[in-house]
Amino acid sequence: MALIKTNPEAEVSVGFSAVKAGTYRMRIIEVRDRNPEKNDLEIKLAFVQPASELLGVDNMPLKGQAGNLFDYIMLAADKQWKFRAITEAAGLLWNDYDPVVDLPQCEVDAVVKVELYEGEQRNKIARYIVPKK
Image (tube, rainbow, N blue to C red; front, top):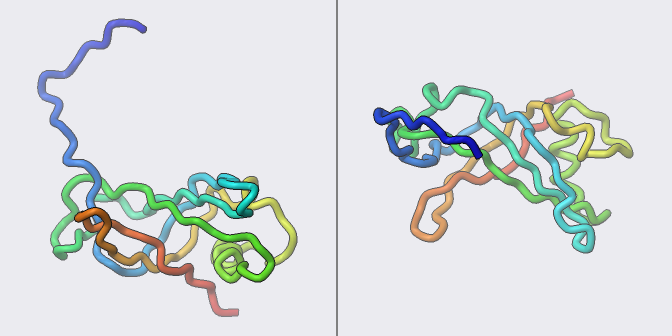
């Protein structure tokens, strides 16, 4: 690897911050067939709104960056309620399709909640908002 010229003014990132609970526009970045034996997907989402416009859990401007969110969706025939919700929220027809190919870059509205995980507040997708027909 080539020598990297470092910036002496660079600050250490404060890391990722949780945003306050609410409904957000999210972009699906990646869909991965996480575990073929369990028949589920890992969905990676990012906030569409810039971090500078988001509020933290303290209702103050977000400190740091809003991290990507990950959601896990079951594909078993009797557990497809969340899969159908993300499909229709993305504007796709509820029909046979390949989510690994067709969902990335789609935008969805999602309800984001805040949970305590190992002593830190973290965001989690609670549900996807399906537009009314």
